[in-house]
Amino acid sequence: MTDGRADVSRRGFLRTAAGATAASAAAGTATAQEDGESGGGKPDFGGFLDQVGNYDGSVADATGQDTATVEVGVEANGGAFGFGPPAIHVDNGATVQFEWTGEGGGHNVVSDGDGPLDSGSAVSEAGVNYEHTFEEDGIYPYVCVPHEGLGMKGAVVVGTDYPTQSSGDGGGGGGSSGPPAVPNSAKTLGVATSFVMVATLGLAYFFIRYGGDYETPE
Image (cartoon, rainbow, N blue to C red; front, side, top):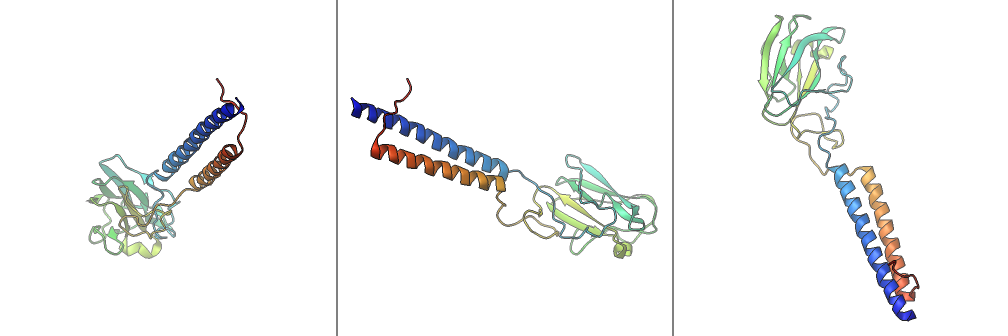
């Protein structure tokens, strides 16, 4: 009778241990996926906007809109030498309208380096003097050429595929590259899950090797 009870208790323990191990592994995987699959992230401008007077590190969210407006000639950098907002996020296919305030003299909108933005010569008249529809994801930095030295710069973030600070990429156009960073919470949970699995398997080996008199509850 003792051997039969031991066999039953061993089988019951192994079933419980296997279930606990599988549940721990599944929980760890689910949490890691939940932490790692959150899309987006803070855009990485590569320091392009660091010296812009009215840039506070935030990005205006204009996603979900067909059109968005950026004012040209808002108060910043010691005068009306700023874009408002200096950083804006729009959907792929959205149109950004650059609306001159009529302040600060003549302004224009020109891509920094290679890029699609070019409003032409500087103008000072108030109104929507330039617009552009963005059809590729990425980050598009731009400047007012006459006042670039004063920090009159801006950037448009488009879509979902763009460099983020977690990816360590620069602030130019194009998508992010490299493997996604693994959140610390997922790493911690992975270590904890591994510990539980090893401990459970160790106890299972002990019961198989030396037996036990713990019966499975009815």
